[in-house]
Amino acid sequence: MAYQECIDCGTKYSIDEIVYFCKKCGDLLEVNYDYEQIAIALKKSKWTSRPLSVWRYKEFMPVKSSTKIVTLKEGGTGFHKCSHLEKDVGIKSLYVKNEGENPTGSFKDRGMTMGVTKAVELGVKSVICASTGNTSASLAAYAAKAGLQCTVLIPSGKIAYGKLSQAMIHGAMVIQVRGNFDDALNIVLKLSEKYRNIYLLNSINPFRIEGQKSLGYEIFDQMDQNTPDRIIVPVGNAGNISAIWKGLTELYKLGFIEKLPKMTGIQAVGAAPIVSMIKKGEKELTPVSKPETVATAIRIGAPVSWKKAVRAIQDSNGTAETVTDEEILKAQKMLARLEGLFVEPASASSIAGLKKLCEKGEIDRNERIVCITTGHGLKDPDIAVKSSEKPVEIDASLEALEKALGLGSTKLARVLVE
Image (cartoon, rainbow, N blue to C red; front, side, top):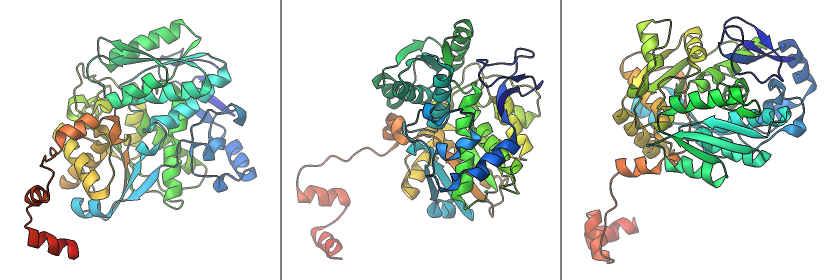
């Protein structure tokens, strides 16, 4: 049996009630379960023989009927051993879980397959979200698959066209708000509260988190039913780090794992309210009124899931750190050139954070570490082009190519022969 529960006062709500905040205290909700029932269901199923994907773990999901599932075959993303990066950073064991390999190119697809499936179960006909890009791209695709009307609000100004183009081509109504992401989220929250037939699918919706927690399950499976010492995650609206932690703690409750990893959150210097709160030992979050960073996916000043994220970091004995835009772009190049993985800037913040924490001595270099990269590099190609060396233009001749490569004809011939 699944139910929604307030993370603060514990008030419970039906799994079929459309509610985004606790009616009693106003705090966030999460989906909880009777774990004995899940254990029984798992014993009856053949879940371990299913293909690696979000729905491999459907017994862990609040879905009543498999016929309602809306899927684009999300999950099952690559788990890359990064031996070159290990040497560069100076650590023993590093893996990158590359979420850019999902259908729309980001981890958001894990949450959207569950969230849109729930929308179909509830019988709503229209879905909405606020987004810096990836959420809008994902929701638009899954809404199209489900035959639902879709509206996305994006902040005016800086938004990566790789993401905006996805929302547009999938047929969503795209509305630009004169303000930042937090302004857009505030508006859609008010709209969805007023019009109950418009279903909100930002990560404040607890069903989104239920899909995203599958990332934790996959790490467990891809490490041969084991866990790393630490998971490093880019943090924007803070849903992903708390979702991964939720998935892993559920495996712990069910007896699949004995040791939980340290959750480490990374934010950009210009949008780091959670890091600031943790480092100062404060009890409440102080929003950043004008967040700014080249990593648009994490340019969020008032993360709605901050309580869940802080609990995940603190309960796991983890930590949080900031990285500069320069460090992010350097890490993006490093990952691409050492491991062949092209990720968007926000994704590279996990690599930048790893390097910084190692240099500060806050990470044991013998740890087994998993860095989450959240979106594909083609989400924001302009940044990659601007930060890379410009193409060299030459005349169409062998001599011009030799000159560009710094080769004489004799040397070139020897190179080609060898």
